Image (cartoon, rainbow, N blue to C red; front, side, top):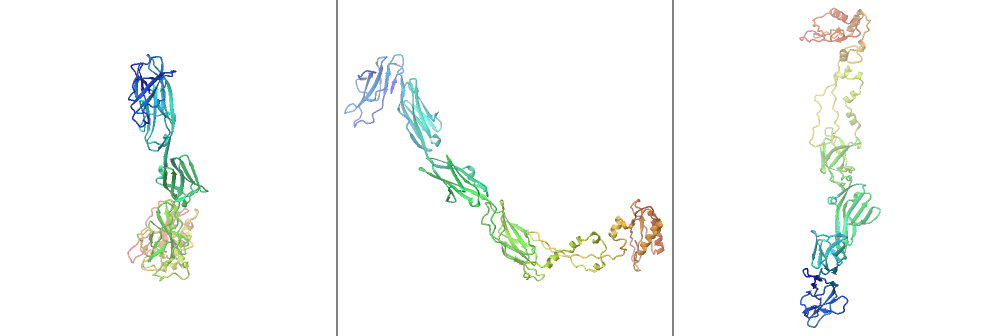
Length: 586
């Protein structure tokens, strides 16, 4: 290196490196020579060899350009001279100037990922040049991970924890007022394979039946690794169902139609010369559960049965929430829900005695209800009261008289027309029907939840008929109570009906009423006719004892005058009970 002192313009400082091989004898000194540019004669710079690899010269003539060379000396003799230095101009007014030059340039480097790498250069130049480092055309500055250090004629670029992004062209430049020089090389970063899964893959992926499955992961490594897909340990290849695509740092797998068989563990494997890497994740394809195991009757006790079954082979991708228990009563020809259970066993009660049943199970999950399981064997519920301990001989069908019992008298009576309803006077023959001594008992409830069963028909309490005491030609459309409350169309009279005609008609009505048999206690009917325009508050007529038939006719004629000029009337019955043995007046 040629260096000029700052204080004295005609001083020249020289510096060189020691020889690589000393020839088997230690170096004792260095011989420094110089010459003017264009002259073939070399002149010693010092009379004696210099002991160190640097020297400062003076006394050179200003205005001339000089060149220098150095020879090393040992016990054997002098070595061949070194390369001739760059020409240096010596002046009294300014320092000597030389263009920058790299004595050691940037070299090609291969680094491993996450390890440290260095780039070193040596340079010459007068004045001292400015050194800069670049990566792919962008200048590099010192940071936490990168350090640039320049001292004297040496500059070092250090990269800590090298990453794949550091790979590229590295350039170093040296510049001063005399010129510019640069050196380029390439940094190659090698790394073992690395697989990066998206964050949502860690908890597993969920797909519905028939949905398109798309799986995508990031694979990096230098050199580029070979990648492989596998499902539950079996290698996957490109075919009609699987489509595998590998681009720069991206590996994808597409499955067109998701099936339950596509669920399980998917594994990605990447291999290169530096090693291998594997990553796996779970994929779930949801569907309704498969049918549970066959329902088995574990025990029967009275009107209850205990069932058990096994869980389905495939839960559909989610835990089974409930099991639905259904029953089928022979003769009804329909499956009905009996209960739900979270366990693999349940007890059903309140079954109908003397009937045959079979059962089946369904599994329920958030993704649907499974198909029913295989049906259980037919179970007969004995009826000890009727002496039925075995199924009837006619087979699985229920007896016909059972369905006839389901139709209660109440249901039959509801289908009657209004004219034949129970409020009318019924046939006298029903009056003799006997009433049961005690009401029917209701079945006891159990704590276990079960499907509501159709109860047996309760016996109908027969109604006691009222004897027909009135002329059915008059009261043939509604009961006596409704005729009295709302009036009867049969009793409407035209406005032009005379008073004497009304009275005669009333007498005919009274004569047609059947007279009770003479008894100690008897009832006397008193009829009062009121006008609709008047207030509805009835006027009570005090009953009289031993009223003769003539007196009763007179009362009817007196009160019939109040309906003159009216098209309708109201018939009101007043009752008054007296002590036993006396007449009851109504």
